[in-house]
Image (cartoon, rainbow, N blue to C red; front, side, top):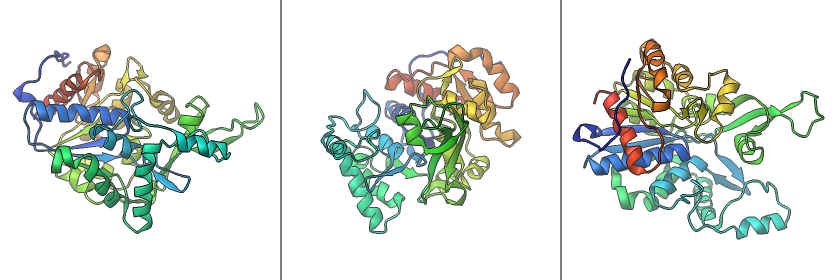
Length: 351
């Protein structure tokens, strides 16, 4: 059994390799990336970081293309995020949302902030002009990422194709006990229903016919390290893996693949991972998620897996499944604490 690694200051041995690829969802992935970049800064690495972001949460609203995870990563790394909410713009106002509600325009449960609207307008105009989502994202990042990171950070959508995650739930409008179900967009499940209605299936519509966006497969194949942050394993990382070719690229890359558990002490830290893991029949534990991803030596995805010190007792079970494991503090309380977590992932990868 691997003993828990001590927390503490970052050391030169924690230096990131030249090319790191991270498969990211929204809030959790973005905060993890802040730790990656703090480690780059602290150790004076020349690391190039490529982020492959989930687009299954994307939704069309009021004629606008909204990409929540792409925008959360972009705003967070570009210092434009509302840090209290973890999503949306800092200094946001909601006049447009209020005016739409006054007209009775639905949906009223999803609000677009006034500052945020500009991003969606630019994105939609470029898409309408024929640019693919990857090119649009690159253009938007010239404002948010390039001034600080230059070519050191790339943000890629997982696909240019339309993919939308839907969740099959008990129909809240049906008669009690009727057993009627309906499929709703993930955003409706999460925001309108607060993930509080019974769910029965998660379906990334369009994923089976999609192709990875330009640069995605290369970013995985040419990486020196691939990281799976504590993003939702079902609707964030799981949706990325649903795009044909991405799972295969992870299995084939020569880079070690190390993941970080978002389940601590038998529950998610935030979000709705517990509910959706249950839908898939996956045990809601750090070990259960590691086994869900599987060991690369046994046809799965992981070479290494970090669990919180609370779950140190699960390390032996995870390693018995063929995945190197270590217990370290996983609470992303600040950038330095998150950087220490990333450093532990680097060390677990043997780099």
